[in-house]
Image (cartoon, helix red, strand yellow):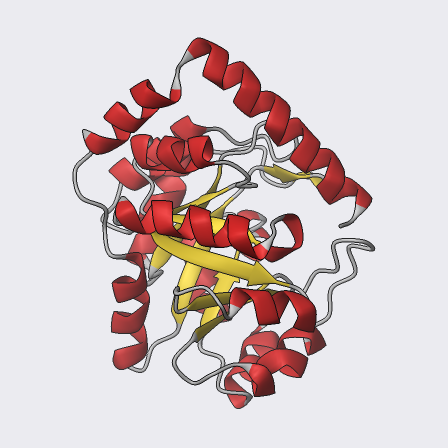
Length: 262
């Protein structure tokens, strides 16, 4: 695990302990149970792919640890509507406060502004966060293989599935891929960013493709910034993308989405 990831995970455990002191797990579980049924995250992607369109998980992100503030003029509801108008399949919304300047309210505002399913993008390490995700209205969660053991991933996936939420499992290398393929989720994210160096190369996705069964939906993440990047992935039969920064830096995120995937 990289130093930054170690640091983030340590912060998460402190946040969970603090949250538990304010709101016990049973209360969060009751809030989760009271939510209306989740939107079909996997189904939304499959529907796009079935119609010959890319499955775009469009990210709503204000800042990152490596880049600082990416979008100062930040209005999650407007961004979500723009993404929906220009063809996104799903949303990914950062809820991490300390490192990404996100919050649960951003997810709630974005999801309420459109009909797209929303992924809670955070560093999930505990069952409390999964209940929290459903309580805030999330339709899917992210599991990062670099941060979790296989038994932990399996337990969090099972809990998410019990709530009706989808799971996107994210890997960076072959060892993590072997673990991720033991989960039930069809959504397999390959992050092209090295979490140690923050270097980005699309070769990460391409290099792992031959090891992935055909029943999985490969989601390429990070480094998709120009039409040539999309074309390269399509040449390798990758049709599902998680893109954030390229859209966030544009005046109108949805228009940039349409341009990138034209």
